[in-house]
Amino acid sequence: MTARKGCYAQQWLNPRGSGAALPSPAENEHVLLSGALAEPATAELAARIRDLLVNGRYEELGQIAGELVGCLVTPKKIYLFKSIMGNSSTIFFQRSGDAVRWSTNPADLIEDPDAEIDRAAIWRCCRGEGPIIYHSMERVRPGQVVVLEQHRTTAVEYDRITPMALPRRTTLPEYAEIAYDLLLDAARPYAGSGRIGVLLSGGIDSSSVITALVDAGADVIAYHLSTDDQLADESSYARAVCEHLNVPLVSILTDNGEGYLSRSWEFPHPYSHTGYRHLEQAAERVAADGVRFLLTGREGDILFGPLRYGVRDILLGDVRWREKQEMLCGVLSSRWQLPSILKSCLSNASLLEGSMPIGENARRSDFLVPMLGMSEEKVDFNFMVQEATMDLTLFRPRGVLLCSPMGSKELRRLSMRLPNAYRCIPFQGRVIDKPVLRMMLARRLPELIWRRGGRSWLNSPPQRYALRYSQPLRELIGSPGSHLVRTGMVNPALLAETLGQPLSVRRNAEALICSAMVELFLRSMEQRLGTAWKGSQDAPAFAS
Image (tube, rainbow, N blue to C red; front, side):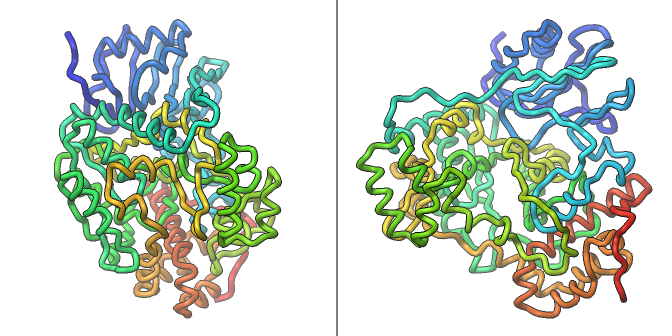
């Protein structure tokens, strides 16, 4: 029997929830899956996964299309595995003697917060950074199988990303067409899966995804998070995309009032971002519309945007000499100063350092107690804990699966081949980011979209909220009973000073809201476990 082509959701079976697991492949054996597959979850699929794992043919797991995350439980061994695709779902696990515990939700594994939560990571989360706070547990990496036996844990890499083989001096237009063909391939499985939702900002990444879906023949509906703040309004771009593609657009007016922060929220990990309430609104509307798959362009920045850039990248890049000359002239006419340009000839220097929120450019957090000896955060682009938190708390509980065709294996392979010199291009004083995606859309969308320059002031709504609702922020973060004050993370006097000056509130708005999210996480954890995180025995005492 031939199954209808499409994309199939498979939810991790929660022991406290409802729903049936895959049919058992053998007696006393179970296969549990999480993610979006390109084939239906059947007894045959369960038997195939079981056969590959038990017989050590791990590399063949990579041939199962989709975001394959799951486990096989047998009487003697437990196999945990994760495909190379997807970065919002993984499996955390812990061993204690002969006992093994694992879950896609790290909060399920926490028993002793003081022993298992890293203080420095909590502090970073208050600043809006995104580290994993649990230092006592391990997780399955992309393209990895972890075999848990009674006295041994073995991790095997069964799949990896290798650079795509392309001719030397492949041109920018050629990269653009290859990228679109690969994105189209990644979008095709969704064409037979009912109505597909796209979270459309109107930016290059989400516009690329919705264009490929329409070309693939999918039944698409776009969801746009709109705002009444003109400084952050991107609705004209979303409308232009949908009108050109003849796609229905649902505009969701985002809540920046009292409901922006809710004390009823429960988190498995701090959500270090200012947009949680807006995504909650999106999840509610998508679920109410009966849409099962919600697609985003979340990997676009990582795969096609500039992570580092400099003269060295131009000179050593696999780019034609004439283009190199034009790029060097573009750098000299850009906003960058000559000392920085010369410094970027070195392998450890980048012209983009001044635009990254690290070191001297880190987000303002004047109300936090300084933590000395902090090194720069190393971002793991293969797993974004912020996205995992959003997935676990907002979308999966409502039966909505977040997916990103932009993160397909073949597009990742193309990204590894892409020269840094083609990740941004300085031209007439401007720095054009993601030129591959822009050129890809040049024949497919209006100029308004692919020529779009600069950015809307997306920080304006959270700044307005912090100015209007400074008292609720003060009560949540700075009251004597707050976890952040009791553990010495927030200085109440500095917080009062910060909230007393409008300019200071604007500068600290992101850290204020992220700290509030951390406080809500610590409260929900205390309610769940019945014990509070003490943070540190030597936390400073503050005068009232």
